[in-house]
Image (cartoon, rainbow, N blue to C red; front, side):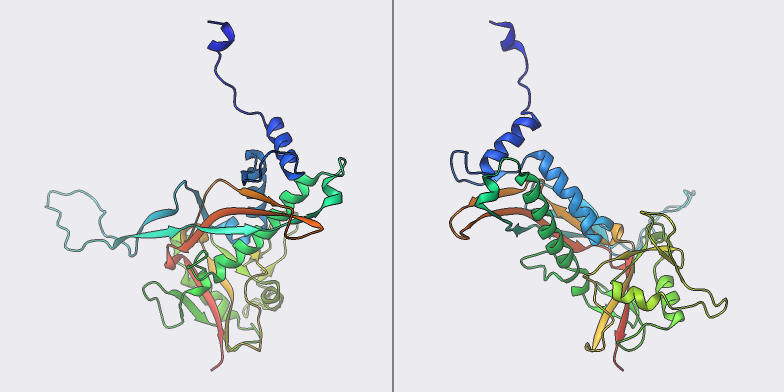
Length: 321
């Protein structure tokens, strides 16, 4: 036996992966079957999607190999804790523990590249395609995490019923903030913040559109006459509202006079409230026939999401009387 045969097989190097992927993109590889993107490219895409998708950057993300993720949740606070005494402990009530199944759905992106660009050896086509896939998938994911129907895509937060008449099972509790078209009431912003239980305040944040932010920036504390909104003085540090960070999400509804009702602001701990599940692979298919003179690349991944804790999400509701 040769000494070389005793050595373990080394994993495929990132350099070889990149070369093989480049050959596939330019049509120099054998076969037209879909291929997995190199692990380095997938890691880069997922990291960038998280920065481009405000909801995903705040929510809990779990990688799974199956077509669904089962999450065990407790729908109400349990009293099964305390100090041990000499008395016999009896449990008359059973905590409402249940299972939520989050199904993964297929998400696709279809960037197109001109034949001439693929033939240009000086152009970094791989980076261009990765960036296009990232931007398209991030836009689709973020919108679905808010408005998805849960049938062919994740179940969105704002697809659930929002109650301004107190907490209800599997319903997001809201605060009536006035009529559509403006946000001016200082007390409603404070009330929304106070609706969130203290145990969720540690990682809580405001989530709103730029349009809603422009309204809230002008609101002042009625007692001190100071602005509730505090602009950040450092790059990368978010603005704050009543001491909690503001995350601007352009997919959130605008403060519009055209709608009978809208939800322009959330105050939530999405790490506790929203669960995202996804598979670690991104497949890509090269199609040089259906978009001439372009080559179309059909990239797919599987992702799902759903609300797992309604108590950790509160909403400001603007509704006509």
